[in-house]
Structure formats: structure tokens, C-alpha cells
Image (cartoon, rainbow, N blue to C red; front, side, top):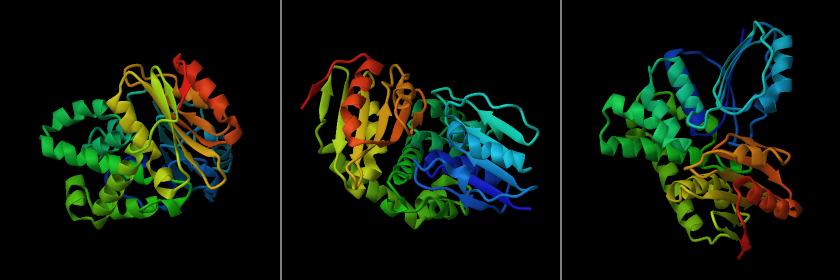
Length: 324
């Protein structure tokens, strides 16, 4: 019998899996990819009697493949925080889904494991822009300011690393990054000793400097839309840049678009932190769109639909618009 671990390649997915496997060691086949590569269950070649753990990928986007695996006699355990329509009860399916805007998959796994590896849950929460939700965990562990800063930097850098059109855009492929974590039960040891730490932190710093030099393409009374160029750094940075914009202007909505080689766009949307709702409803209006109330995205927005997206953005957040 074989086991498959299927996980989003961002900080939340990696930290969720790392917590689980620290608590429940298991040799498995890894199935992952860039952050927006979420139709992952289609790639699972499990057979009758095999088992699959899924972390931080949308059940709605994987529903057909999930049902196929269950029909084949594969046991599936599913941890996720994205909105999902109801799925019929099945003896082979164990679901842990909480779409609340204050929750990420790492926090769901932390709850499931009753805090056995909570430091990694905090890293995952910081990576998913949920520092506020991490505060009760931080207080329970009595962490000092330098420790909190390290966990935040690590989570944000791991999350940044997952963005790109393909793994060729990334500094460290997600499966390799997870493999490098496996030797570390403590994220402070990973931060101090892994060569990947400097690679991620320096890469993110350089990319963020480029992003901060950009001006918004569309300026709205309560939100901005940025359109970044068709470069690897822009495809890596747009999610982290959107998070930074959201945290620095908590009353405003934000969208960051990066152009792919065809001139179409990948889109990251952040609802105002002060009113964290509406992002997923906006993105679900477009093919390949999805996410959660506070943060969502569109994997592929055709360039001819850009103005349609701007109009939908205005409607979603009740904003007027001026193009620069």
C-alpha cells in the first residue's frame, strides 16, 4: 500500500504537512507545485487500498478527482481552509475544512494535533498573512520579539517562493523546500542552519524592492490595482506584494496582476484587512478564479478581460476608479 501527500507549495501547505509528518511520520509520494497549481489530485496515481492526505488545495477544484479516488477504494484525509461546497459523506473520506477568513490550513492542522508542533503553525500563519490569528499561539508560547521576527520572515519568504508560472520561476521547488525542512522540528534551527534560508530571504528582499518601485496602474478611492511586467521576479513577488499592500493600508482593497509570456495575467486580490470579505466572490466570476473571503486570485485572466476585471473589482468593493 502506498501513501500520497498532496499539498500546496506555499508556506501554509508546506508547514501544514510538516506539522503532520512530524507528529505522524510516514513515507509518501509528494505531489505539489507552484502556489496556483491546485488541481493536484488529478496527478495522484493511487490504487485500491492506498491513502492520500490533501493539504491546502481547494476541494471544489479537485472534486472530480477526489470522487474518482474514493470510488477506487482510496482513503482520503482532507485539510483545507478554502470555501468548498458540501461533499457527500463517504466512509473513505475524512474532512477538516474551515473557510473562516481568520484560519489557514496550518492552524487547522495545529488544532487537529492539539499544538504538538505549534511553532510551524505560526510560520504557516505568517506566510498566509494571518499574523493576527497567530497572536494567541505566540502568547501561549511566550515568544520574544526577535523570535517572532524570525518566524514572520521565514513564513513570508516561504510563501513568496511559491509564486510563479512554473517551478522554473521559483528559487526553491516546493518538494525540495519541504524535504529540507524535514530534518528540523524547530523552525529556529532551520532559520539558523539551512542554506535555503538565505536564498529565500535575499531573493524575496530583492524582488520586493523592485515591486515597491512600481506605481499602480489603476487608482481607486479605496483601493489600487497594480500591473507588473512579464518577468520571473514579478511572477514570484505578486502575492507577497499584495499581502504587504494589504497590511500597510488596512482600509483599502488591492489587486496585483503579473503578466505571463502570452501577455495574459495572474491575479492576486486582497480584501481590506479591516473588512476581510468579497475577494473570493470577485475572483469566482472568472474562469480559474477562487480563494477565500480575505484573499483570492485568478490563475489566468485573458488580457482582453482586464477592463471587465477592473469593473468587477469596483463593484465588489464599492469603489470608483481612475486609470493612471
